[in-house]
Image (cartoon, rainbow over all chains, first blue to last red; front, side, top):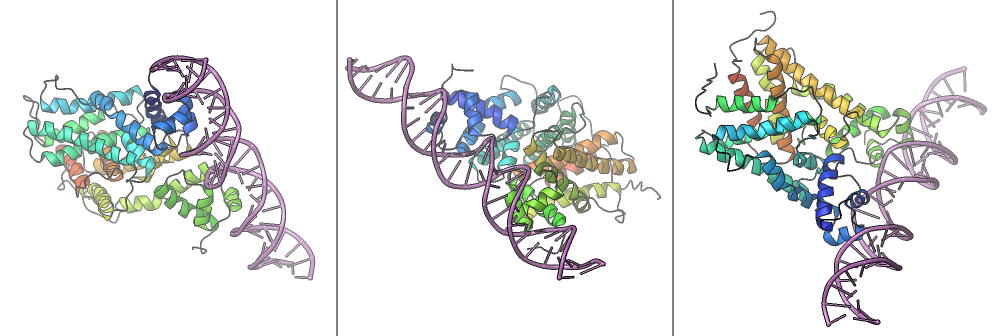
Length: 196
Length: 196
DNA sequence: CACACAGTAAACCGATCGGTTTCCAGAAGC
DNA sequence: GCTTCTGGAAACCGATCGGTTTACTGTGTG
């Protein structure tokens, strides 16, 4: 096992993986065993299992976002930066290890929208919408607020499709997002696909 | 409570509601108590809790579909029949008691795609896609297969949005589906109903 | 009447749950 | 040396898990 990182880091890493793979109903015994941390240490570092759920979700946020969002060094047009999110998601789907958006999955498992983990999930979804919104504003889109929400909906819909293991269709996320952007007149530059 | 229906019906009803509201991790004791059925009877009627999960999902299928799909007596154009699904979903969202698509939620909680409940969920999603596909073919849409999947993705995305309780935006499902249909050239005017 | 059957209430089983506590090994500070 | 602190191993707690069994109460049907 990993004995290099601190017990806190080991716990957050193991929690992020096991809560995602097996669900938040996995026991703290199994969790601590996987992390190589005693339950005593765990309950010294976190007040409860619920707090560990929330903190593990929050701690995976930055890496998850850099995985999905193109960085500022990517100077492509806003439309391409938006579609890049769906390209990466589609890629994760075809790689087969994508079990859906961990934030949505956890929120569904927790049921209680006031649970600290649900609050983190809501926050992350808002960050994704905010990213879309910023790019749409850059692209000069009309009604960027609605369009950003619609893109988030497509993201979560693709995620749900991966969960239920429906018949795979490569690039459906990118295609759907692109169709929406086309309909809203958000172009990359040269290609103008007016609906009709 | 309800003592009118048979123990089996009472169990399926209670399971459909409690598994949806509280998640499949609810105990069989609480479930049987809510249904007014003894555990002995439950295990005579169903081999295991997992089987009850699957059967309760399957049993709610017909009523859930008549709730969402317009019936054959609705002779509006195919496009309107498609949008009616999203209108009803949007309405359930604003009513506030919509906790997401029960099939997707259950599949996420179960994690195992081979679980009988996950199989039922996959089957239901396919039926929704099939409904869209039939209507799109009636409307003479190109690439009805892809479009039907895209509409299903929007449906599930709206569902996920309801779960995480993101900022509400009325009618976003209908608007997104309509934008997609517009982009594909599926108009209200094209009433390609089967017999004319 | 007797008999069978359907079904509930509740005890019971071993396992596991979230959480606490005890005990002990090792490293750091003096 | 001795002490103090971190942290792992494991026992322990009451509650609950899925599932089984016993005991009893109806309610027909001959």
